[in-house]
Amino acid sequence: MHYSKDRILTTHTGSLPRPFSLLQLYGKRIRGENVDDKAIDRAGLEAMHHVVKHQIECGLDIVNNGEQQREGFFLYVERRMSGFGGRWKRYPRADYLAYPLLREMMERQTAAREGANGQVPPCVVGEVRYLDPARADTEPREFKQALTQLGNADHAAFLTAPSPGIIAAACKNEFYPNDDAYFEALTDALRYEYEAVIRAGFLLQVDCPDLALEHHRSFHGRPIGEFLNFVERVVAAINAGLTNIPRDKVRMHVCWGNYEGPHDCDVPLEKIWPIVKKLRVGGFVLPFANARHAHEYNVLKKMPMDDDQIIVAGVIDTLTNFVEHPEVVAERLQHVVKAVGDKTRVLGGTDCGFDSTAGQGRVAEDVAWAKLRSLVEGARIASERLF
Image (cartoon, rainbow, N blue to C red):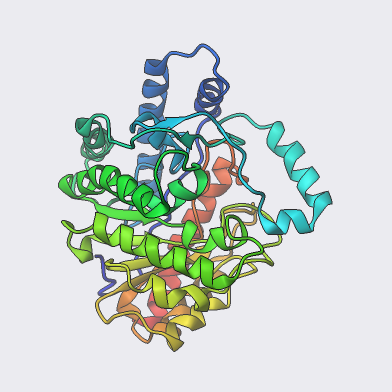
């Protein structure tokens, strides 16, 4: 894990805006149109090189591949794993049900976009297995090659992989006798991806929106105890998947869904934090920039992290084209440092990805880069005040 020895380090959460040409290719594949998979691979690789270069130019301390070679942060697994088939429509988010006019507006906007946005998740109709273990090494290897070609082979970097919980929640189980058996199969398959990231020498970030989001989706209208039981089981599954990985090589991201909406049905962080803290990770990536959760850094004061754990504080909102002023970024970081009580364990980051599902992003590419530059400048200002 990276500690800020003499300044606040900067990173982000994962996905970065994809070029329109790549979005079109992903959209064609999702719609079942004739498209050359090799053309998608080439376009994804080119886009990945582009975003790696720009992250370094922005001054980010810990970079990634922008998830350019995936059409989404987790549904890509259906092409790497067996057992998926058919489609089903998930239960809507509770806050969309509460605001029908907003829902209609967002559905119209979604229909007009290119990319994989609006992709309907598959079901699980057979045994889940990772089809080609060598495939897990491809993204890390190509990312490492990109860094080397840019003359930054030793630059601090991370790669993402999904929680078994988000796959289980989104991809309906029609094969396994119960959820625990389903979790176990997903964990065994995901272990290939988790360990491939570590073999390549990068940090692993496990993306776990399910640990908050599913409260008002899969568990909408049900007692919170049932949802917290789900969180407990997912945390246990993730820990099983990380068995062979040192804790200080892993950070996790949790959020309430990367979408613009009321979010007034979100479960409070303090409700899930005692369970989330049981994850065998060296750091947490939490959203503190958006209007619904900006106050929740105080949870870190009430229920502290372990002394060897870091927090990547989301101080940039990934759902608005406002470019945060560096002074705002600095103030947000200072608030988090005060709550944590240790400036060396606080990093600056983003609330979530800029394009978690290809075409879903609401921030223009040039604005996204401006936001990341503001993050770096805000961290510099905070560093001058704190160190």
